Image (cartoon, rainbow, N blue to C red):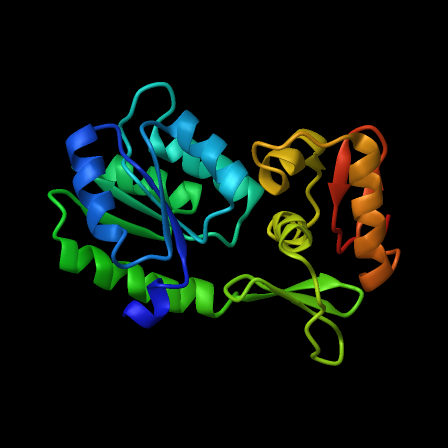
Length: 228
């Protein structure tokens, strides 16, 4: 189990502080990185910023509930697994979760071993299968290893920031990623000019070709599999 989960970043969204803290503390011994949020709105913002591999969330929370957050996350990254942890087991809740695209549903109170077993199975089914994403022009992006691979199977040498940039675009294929989101994800806490970003993109294009990354003037960038 640890071999699978230790390479993953998880977003855990729970409004009850004691539950959030206790479960997050245990998760830190299992996952590569644990990101926490106290409601769906905060969770969605942190998802956009950190691009976690897996999301665990409660349903009933203030500001934005877990299902609404999950729906937004699935619109951004349909391959990211989302597991719901909730005290609710009514048929309506389960049907709503299915409609949103929830990948797994566990009923509270949560048994930690059961949680990790379910998480491990979900990671094998969803992340293992979809670890390599076809992103066009013969390129693949491996989400688990965080590497870009060309048509001959060779890894493209990218810097940490270049990989962060490619990762956020690869996880949102055919979706525009705004300049502000890119700055927050790649240059967290740093100031960066638009001119510096253009130079940065040029360096990546020198390595991957001019056609992989599309520029949407004044808005941002995307990788698209569609003819435009």
